Length: 165
Image 1: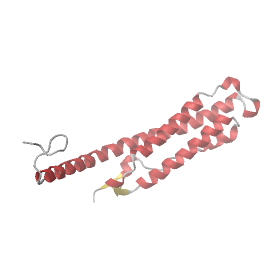
Image 2: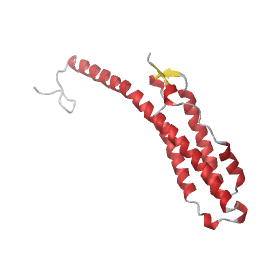
Image 3: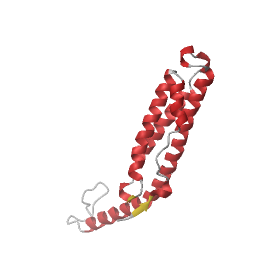
Image 4: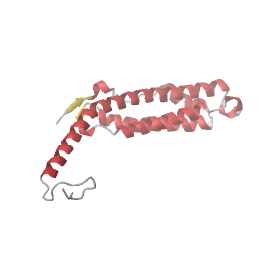
């Protein structure tokens, strides 16, 4: 069994800045509240994946890159939604412009840092998994070649049918 030290991949938990949670308390802007809640939820899901990465695991049990990429897509989408907030059309009950701007910036910073960490981990997993995938491909190609050479029917055409040669 091949093992990998994932400490180099920075699989530490994603830390949520206390400022991001305070930002959600500082404003009642509906889009900031919604996006902030979604960002915190996605960070928790990404942490669940990172928990499975910690310490030493078998190479074959590395997390699916697609799971991590899904988190980065969600976080990027929420950053875009936060960027689209029009600060010139705030209702007084949502808080003043400076408060909403600060809340938005805090959430964007947290999401951006999480994306940076997840992207780095994705690159590391791909780099670690590439030799394993190549070995699997080479092994299955050798198996296919051996099984074809033992075929009682003889050589096959490109369509998989016995050739007439």
